[in-house]
Amino acid sequence: MCSSTDNYNIQLERNQEHLTFFNYVIYYDMICEWCENEFVQRRFNQRFCKKLCSKYASRKRTGKKRLERWKEQGINMTLEKYNLLFEQQQGKCKICGKSESEFKKRLGVDHDHKTEKTRGLLCDCCNRTIGIFHDDINLFRKIVEYLQS
Image 1 (cartoon, one colour):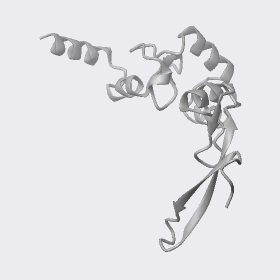
Image 2 (cartoon, one colour):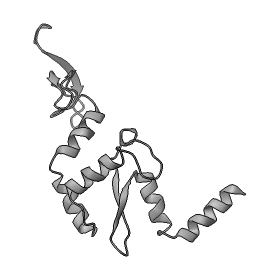
Image 3 (cartoon, helix red, strand yellow):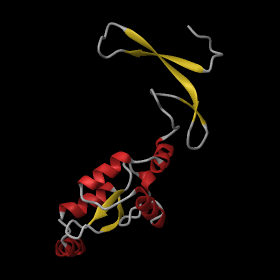
Image 4 (tube, one colour):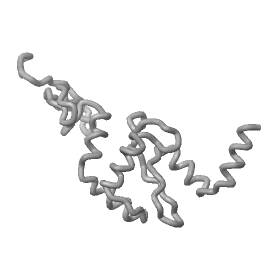
């Protein structure tokens, strides 16, 4: 066993595959790659102290998976355009105005499926709502009328 003066903590964790055996998992004191605060690593390859730091850093990464997904969906978007839109919208959903840090997912690219023109960055809830109503403005008007009655 390691002494308490070492820079890591040892925690006993049950191995779920073999319930009769136990594994030792070592958690090291780490420095967050984004904000440079010290934190205790809770999972293998954890590089950030909290989800917010991870979100900020993820926008600076290459985003290869996102680029591939955008191409598959027919969205004409690059990381540079995404970051520019993100800065223009101050990191907030274009409809509800909530900050990206309030959500588990990052803001998604909203686009018109007919013209394939990008409209802005939306939270998952707002983007799905538009998709559920198939971009039909008349249906949205009826919903507003219903809510006002």
